[in-house]
Length: 217
Ligand SMILES: [Zn+2]
Image (cartoon, rainbow, N blue to C red; front, side, top):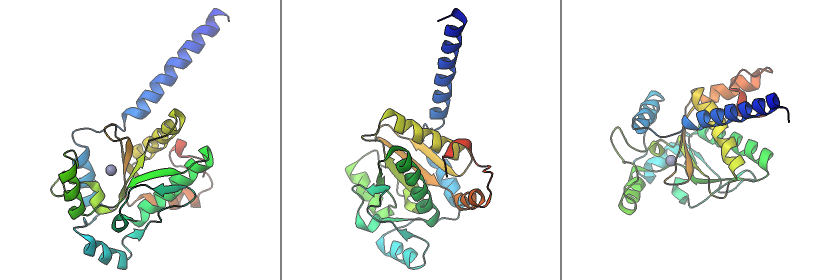
């Protein structure tokens, strides 16, 4: 290979690694991640579920929607029956993301957490000292029903990177708040209410103005 060709190649590789590092970096948890998520949830005026009877009330009011344990694009793993609910826009997000993932890689996403009640969060704390609080400014975003966890277990490097890119793009666009966790191998995502408008805008305009790497939809 001619010398300048080799240099160009090296430069390309360096740029690519920098781009990948930058897109992954924005998903790292920071000291304020929990506070920010609670501020966003307050901004979306989201109640936190105290117990199963409160969940049932919200389901009757259609403020929470039931999530099937298995579709062709995702399946729930170890999610208790009474926690199989999400806010409508978070369910929409899961359905779109998983369809795109499945279209691209031919396999479903594994979802390990949806809604959690404060009562359930307390039982998690008793079993696991690292579980988030059930109350206060650092309480878990799962109490709102607007959050979900997607497992990285069994994914190839390319599949993880695809998810990182898509989630970073939506995170930077302000539609979601996403964290890549390492202690537990999951992507934790809080979906904002405005995600619904973002999808409406995207589907009503033929020339998509949304973040570039969201996928072919
Ligand atoms: Zn989570």
